[in-house]
Amino acid sequence: MAHSGVRIDPSARTHVDAAIGDWLEHVIGRDILGDAQNYVHKRSGRLHDSLRAEVQDKTLRVGSLDCNYATDVELGTGPHVILPKNKKALSWPGAAHPVARVNHPGAAANPYLRPALFQRRTP
Image (tube, rainbow, N blue to C red; front, top):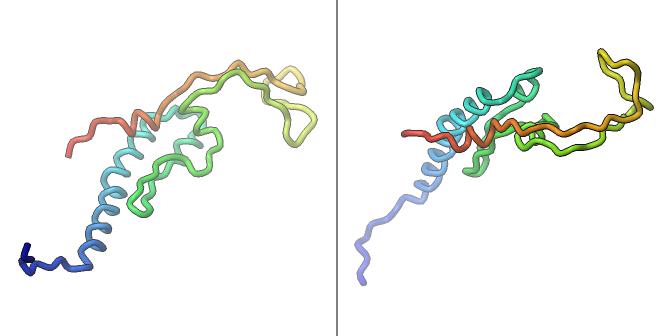
């Protein structure tokens, strides 16, 4: 089979990759992040404020980089024991007295990221 002599500019891939990254970050990423911030339960605002969208190598990541309970809010938790880490007892405002442990009953899921991800989007 004869070749037609059409050549593709080698820099085209770089331009296409840049356009994909830009679209992921500034269109889809911004939309998913905005929805996640709207859906997240705002008790203290820490989780809401920690949410980010970033693109690296044409991969979009949306979520919290530094809020250690983000997954617990999204998926919920089963019953678990809370123990003090740096002290001998736990105490909080309104507690009758310090305690050595708390038997937490678990928490229901409050999804915010999955609903944002699966939100129907129109071009």
